[in-house]
Image (cartoon, rainbow, N blue to C red; front, side, top):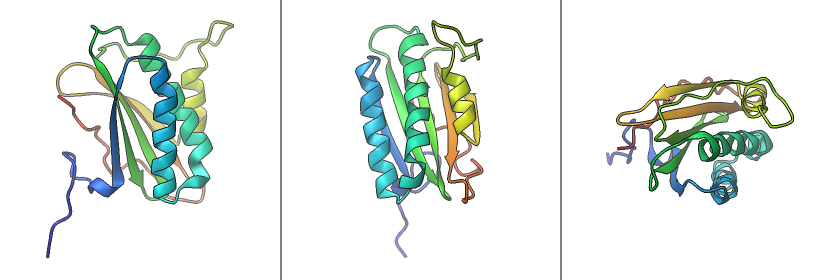
Length: 155
C-alpha cells in the first residue's frame, strides 16, 4: 500500500497549507486569501469569517510587533482538523504577544482571537522565534486542537 506524504509533524500534506511572507502589511490580505482558498478546498466555508479574522489579527501582530532583522520572513501554516482549522503564524521574534488593555491606539487583536478561537497559544520553535496559533472550530464540530498540537518547526 502506498504511503501518503506528510509534513515534518507527520500530518498528511493534504491537510496542511504553508506559506512564507515578507514582513509587510500587504501580506495580511494575501494570507487571508490563502486561508479562504484552503477552507473552500476543505469544505469549511462555515468557519471562514471567524478564521479569516483570526489570521488577520495574528499576521498583523507579526508584521507590526515582531522586531526582527531585515530578510526574516513570516510563515503561516493552516492545518485542517476535524471540523476546524489550526492557524499558525511563525516569526523570528523571541518576544511573545501580551494582551493589552484596549484603547484608541489598539490592543483589540488578541481579544478578537480569544473570542473567535476555541483555543490559542504561543509556542517556541526550533531556532529563533515563536509560533502563535489558534484553533477555529465549527460550533457543531470537534476541533480540539489535538492534531498537530506542536507547531511545525521551520529552520
